Image 1: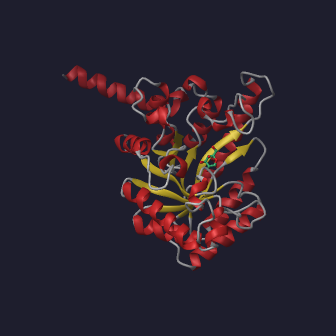
Image 2: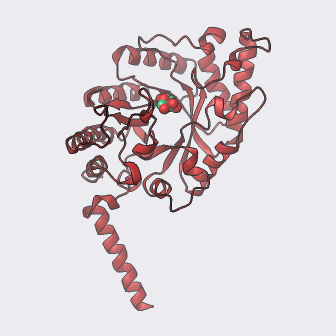
Image 3: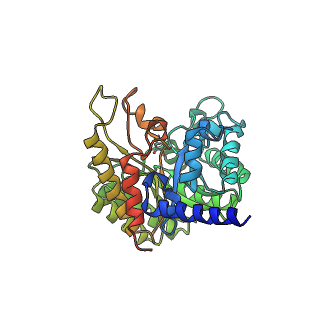
Length: 358
Ligand code: GLA
């Protein structure tokens, strides 16, 4: 018994020492950034649908992350494909996975122009729906979906991508039929459906000044109407040279100055490797590592404003960038490579976290 105790203590000591100064592949992002923000990934059904524990991605998700987002299963077209017909099976499994692994579970998303079936905006004859009917449909959807996961899904992307590149409101079916107050209504419905859930506005490219100005104007207007918004999600679909760290920083600061929390919600770095290449040259691996280190330095510096950093995908094999915008391309945008190997970018991110005074 005594020996067992000594060996156990030794293991804990060695394990701890390894995490701090040994091979960084032993490190876990959720521990390294524990005092800074949650760290997460967007999951696909293969990862939460009863996948065996020896599946390397499942093991990696459990080890590295403390928050999860669903890549697709909660989008309107997946969860509510036909009028009055909900498909909750996959979303239930996603939520069960999060609960089982004690993760902060995100809902993505409720109101969006994309991956929303055409019938949503039409009546039974295929003509555009009236404002009242669309508002009613939006309310039913939000109450049904948010209500089902009340108390389990802790934060919702209520409206996704409502602003255009020039800062004007996107001419979506929602805006055209309901008018500008569709946004306020969406937040009010979601709040009514689960008063304790955090509600977010989520969008991309807000690092560009015209779009950011539009998003800020929109958020200020919503705040003046007392919309229950908790935070802003900066998607973070970046490239190697856009946006530069100071633009990321300015965007975080601008949103935080509205009294909102900031989240990086869909982080990846599009490397655009040369056509035909099927591995990542070392120089590019190192460049990606420097790029991620630069981004995480900004995130850590603003840890009092940022609550979460979520990657859009777990390993390079899962990334949407393998098929959009160029189908069949081999992409390398994340911290883990195919086969779950840690990349130099992972070590660089861990090094930023470990060198931050707590
Ligand atoms: C947007 C959406 C996500 C996802 C990504 C790309 O950012 O918010 O749900 O579709 O595009 O995959």
